[in-house]
Structures are given as C-alpha cells and as structure tokens.
Image 1 (spheres, chains in turn brown, yellow):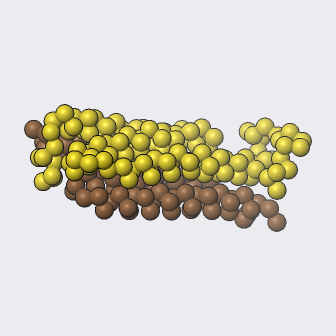
Image 2 (image 1 turned 135 degrees about the horizontal axis):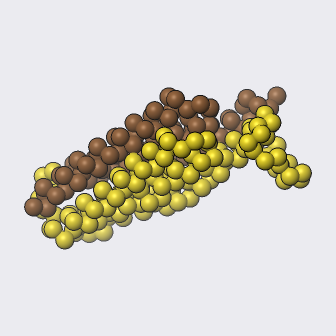
Image 3 (image 1 turned 90 degrees about the vertical axis):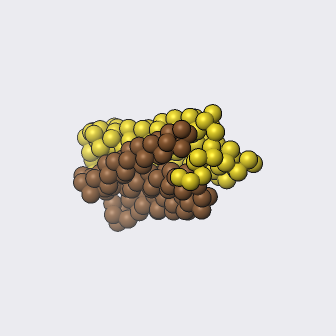
Length: 93
Length: 122
C-alpha cells in the first residue's frame, strides 16, 4: 500500500519537475534579453536539484543529496557571476 | 523502490503529499517564468521554487530517510539554510544589474533614478 502510494507520488513529481525544467529551458533558449536567460538558468538549477532529491527518495540512497548540494552551490555562484557580468561587462565602457 | 515497502503508511502519506506539493509549486513557478510579460514581473515567479517548493521536497526527503533509518537524518537542513541565504542575494544582484542596464539605455518603462541613490552601483 505505502509502496504503491510512494511509487505513484514519485512518478508524478518527476513528471511535473521535468515539465518545469522544460519551461525553464524554453525560456533560456527563447528569452528576449540576457537577463531573462540568466533568471531561467537559475530556475533550471533549482529544478535540477529538486529532481535529484526526488531521485534520492526513489532509489533510497542518500548519495543524490550531495549532488543536489553541489548543484545549488554552483547555481548560486554562476548566477552571482552572471549578474556581475551584466552590470560590468557590456554596458559600461 | 525496494526500501519504500518498509515505510509505514503514516509516514508514506505525508511524504507523498509533500512531494506532490513541491513538484506542483515548481511547475507553477516555471510556468510563471514562461507566461509572464517583462523581466520585472518574471523575476517574482522562481521564488516559488526556491522557497516553498524545494523546502517541501527537502522536508519529504528528511521525513523519508529519518523514518527509514530510524534516526534523524538532517543533512537537508544544509540546503534549506543555503537556499534561504542565497536566493535573495542572487535575485537582488540580478535585478539591480538589470535596473542599471535599463536606466543606462534610457528605457522609458523604468523610472529614472533619484539623484544620489545610484552612486553605489558604480
């Protein structure tokens, strides 16, 4: 009973998260300006971390947690660097 | 899903509900990113993912592994703390950069900066 419930919930959550990642990836490809792409990339990182956590629940191993932690760290660093680039890189000078 | 059979029903129901809540909130945030017009409306949407969405999935993960291993598994608090600290910082950095760019280009949709307020941006 609980196994069937969890299997269904994990499957539905994975499908929803993949659709959400598709929306964010579409905004990355389509985004009219650079800032839209940066924002969508940040969202894509967070969705990928959530998908890895759901994978961890599905397989019952805690190793996926480390990957999710690394993804959130890299997402923070890359978004901060890209925001800095948007402020300094193109417009001034 | 071999381990999930060991999980009692009183723990499986909240885990399933929290998973569905988090994934649904992630989908709503990403759909908002897709459908809203303009950057300044769009920057509000992903905060749904980064606060309540990932929070509920992390809570589900904590509950699942704590019940499964019959001890407290609290690594996930690291990600919770990290997301709470970094999300406002990155979005504020990004929005200030975009506001600066729009003002620099003379975009009419953005109100002009008040004198004396923009010097810290340089």
